[in-house]
Length: 424
Image (cartoon, rainbow, N blue to C red):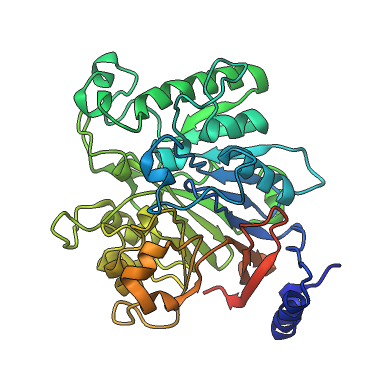
C-alpha cells in the first residue's frame, strides 16, 4: 500500500499513528526522480550515510566498522550492533542500500566518500576479519565495495600533511602504538583500491577542495540545474568561498591528528542546503572556543543551512558558539554510537536561541543509557533518539520531510514522520 506522505501532511501523520496502533508496518515510499534522499544509517558501529540524488546518482559517505575485539565496543559504553548479529556491519549497510536503491538502475554506488581514516568512519582490521579474493581484509568500506561496485572512491589522499605510505612515518610511535591500527587498516584499504581498480574500474581520488565538479549528477544533470555538491574542506585546506580556491591551515610535516583533516561537503538543491564534515572540532582543550580550529574556519563558507550533521558525533570538542551561530541549521542530525555523545554543553549550544533564533529539531541515531543518566530530561529536546534518519527533499529543494525508520527491524518500517519543513 502506497500513501503519499509528502502531500497529505497532518492526515498522513495521523494515519501513520493508526497503522502503528494496529500493528501494521508502513514502508518508506520508494524514491522518485526529483527526490533527494539522505539516509543516516544506524549500525551501532560508526557513521554511514547513503544518498540518492535527484537523478538517481548514488553516494555513500563513510562506512564505520569498529572492531568487535575492543572492550569499548562490547561494553555498555557503546551501542549494540543492529539490527542483529546475523550479518557484519558492512553487510548491513549494503542490505540497507539494496532496500532503497533506485530499482530501475544498475546496482552500484556512483560515489563513496570517506571523511577520514578512523575506524568508526572507514573500518578497522582485526583477527576476526575474513580475507577477500583480492587479498585484503574485509572491513568497513572495503567490505562494502566488495559487495557492491563503487565507481569513484574519494578520500583525503595520503601525501599531505604527512605521507602515510612512507615507512618512516608508519614506524613513528604515534602510529606503531595505535591500538586501533589505522596504518594496518590503511594498508588493506590500499590493497582494496588497487584490486577494485583492476576488477571493476574503480577510480580513486582525493577530495578537491573548492570544487563543485568532482561529485556531480551522472544521469540527468540538465534536469536539476540547482543541484550541486561543493567540497568545503580536506586535510585542513579550506575553500575561500569564491572560485575553487582554498587556503591551508597546516604545513607539510604538521600532523594534527585525523579529525582536523576530515573531508567536508555542502549539498545544495534549490533553496535546500545540507552540510556534513566528519570529526572536525572547534573547542580547545580548556573548553574554550578555538578560532583557529576547523569549525571556525569552515563556518563562514558553509553559511546558513537547513540541515547539518553534528561534527564529531556531538563530542564535547565540537559545535563551538561561532560555528553554531553561523550555520544555524533548522535541523541537527547526530550520528552516534557511544555514551560520550552528546556532551551536555554541546546540547546547550545547539539549542540556544541566544546563539541563533527560531525553532530547531534534533535527531539522533541512538542515545545510550549512560548519556540519559547524566543529562536526563534535557534530552527530551530530541525529536528522536533511536533509528535510521532519512531526509527526503521535494519540489526542487523547496521542502523536505524527515522519517525515522526502525533500526531493530530488517524491514526498516517507518516509526515517525516529521514535516513538511520549508527550505530557507
